[in-house]
Image (cartoon, rainbow, N blue to C red; front, side, top):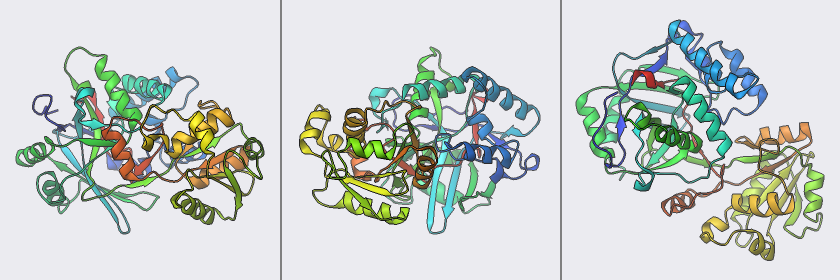
Length: 432
């Protein structure tokens, strides 16, 4: 890996020798890719990916075995075997990678590289969500075992929108013949190009030197990068982490909600605790389906002046809208040591007032699941007798404002996208 300039110069994106699938050795590039590990939450989704191709990346990012230690050991052995068998092979020289995703009218382009992990106090990379320690523990153990960054996290920065600097390199490169192209089942086409020309690399470095970035997706992986770097006293490849960097002035990201699945709370018990049908903690109303219509009702309530926080409960075959929370309850249950923008977040109110105070649901994997897809949350709740709590997306401006203040939002508050596909390029730390 070619190391950029000294620490303390904004975003520093280093070229690396990408580890990539050898197209001739797999069924198709689309069949070996996967959404990021935390999006693949349903067992049926995991099985579908595992059966799509014996070399699907999910066998590395979500290995299946009896214990965590066995899972991590299995992933490491699988990665070594795939390299030995020529399934994965390193590119011949260090490079940055221009990555394009396209779906109908949506187009996103960015740069994949190894980002220097600046000290936390420098504020070069801004997190906006809290993390769950057990997830960081698991990701750290997986990265230690495999000695690799298996999938990039998504970072967003904002330029002045002109086609200069890094943007100029991205646009020029995207006019060339791609290194690889594939279309995944979700309809997105993916294209990847290598950038190795020293002049192009210097142009990117000079532009990014003055930028800071927001973590759009991948807070747990970012926390893992920092933990693993801090474990080592000598400079080396752990001083860098694999990222996709997107200029949102040119390619705005979409902000979506992450929904909650309460495994051990039935809709009937959830509504009873709220004082339904009249409601006391919230105004509670049955709303018409199907799901798209119910979500439209949620969106309208969330944007209605004076409605306060709004949630949609599902799991009993119907939908129930919660809005207009009791101000006295909010004052008693929501911490007051944070800015108002944080105190009024839906995720803050959900966890402080509903989950902890009213429903008394522990925030553990056995009690709460986090799903990006509303339909999947409803389907699982109905199948297993749980409650789906469907959320409305946070406004992007609120995310940026809190991040700049150093105020983390509750974990799993937002889902920025489109997310990079996992499996197109990996970073082996053994290669530098």
